[in-house]
Amino acid sequence: MNFSINSPILFFLVGFVIAVVLAQSIFFLAKAWKHGREIGMDSRKLKKTAVTAAVFTIAPAVAIVISVITLAKDLGVALPWLRLSVVGSLSYETISANNAENAMGLSFGSVSGLTASQYVTIASVMTISIMVGIWLVPVVAKKLLNGMIRMENRDRKWAEIFSSAMFIGMIAAFLGFVFCDVSSVFKGSATGLIPVCVMAVSAVIMSLAGIGVKRAKIRWIADYALPVSLIVGMASAIPITAWLG
Amino acid sequence: MNTNGSYIDRVHKWGMIWNLSVMVILLLFPVAVGLIFSAAPDPHGLVMGLIATAPLYWAVGVVETFTYVPMLGAGGSYLSFVTGNISNLKLPCALNALEQAGVKANSEEGEVISTIAIAISSIVTTLIIILGVILIVPLTPVLEAPVLQPAFAQMIPALLGGWAWYLSRRTGKSP
Image 1 (cartoon, each protein chain N blue to C red):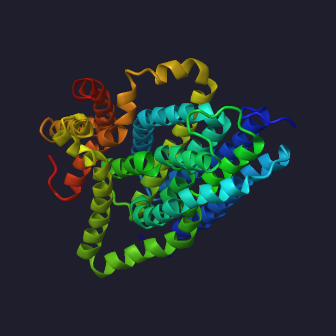
Image 2: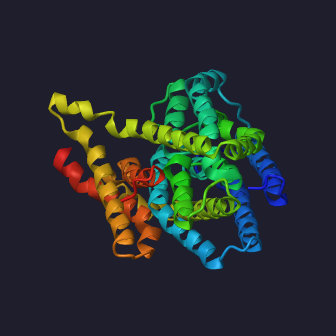
């Protein structure tokens, strides 16, 4: 069979994998919902959780579609569709595709007419390199979660400190992304301040939402505060970039 | 949470079956493409590509597993590590849901809320990507419009601003 990066058979294969993963999500959703009702959780609470999660997901999912479009120029639509629907992430896929193409002497963003061999190589690198979490979670999750519960039963305060420390450590890692280019200010460029300003706008929106909930007692604001702060923060990046960029 | 309870034990059992099955199916994708088009991977490209990519992301994968699992709960972890986009989507989505529901991740209610939030987020993401793939021709000029690029480039800082609020709640300094 002649190879093309947009061959219908590739879409069939990818569609099958994505259908399996979609089935897993529906399976876990149904089981969690049923168990929630069994332990007496209010169905309105469960529905509210579902609606809030769906609303929050829209903006990041559109950003993921953009990554599919970016990678599709080199790899066709099917492989980026698979990689960004299953296991992958926005940052990882671009880096792994870039590394795999460079290893074969190709230049990311300007590849045309991949051969089947090159395609299989890139798909293999992108797949194998991201596989750790998917098998490590079944190996360690039960022990890890039971360990957390044992720790909490032994010393609740220490468990909370441990949990907060992990969260703060994760936030600190992400803050590196925000502040990594701030030093550009000393070289006469203000572009490094763009992510800092965007983060500040988003935090201000969240704080206003918090005030609305606490002072004005408007509870529903809390349900949509995070997605709204995300979208307003992203939208603010347009004028901020025009100003500082 | 009662770890001897049947629900959480079943979640671990289902998670193991689903995750390992999806892993096998995923690994079979390049194999299937190779068989269908009678093509083998380029050995040099494969080895060099893996050397450049795998060690870093394997290390990240280990760290992410030990960091995210206690925050996501059992069902949420199994789903998140299959559907991906954890830090930029699934984790904040789950944390927000737990916060709004007023429950902790390692409680039985938290397990349910986290799993529902991540499952819905995964389904919505998959559907939006499918829509994007179907409409890729008309969508490309819109989503790649230069005026919109800064918005998508700054998604993580915009997300972090909201998380700062969540952090302040955790440390008892809520606005």
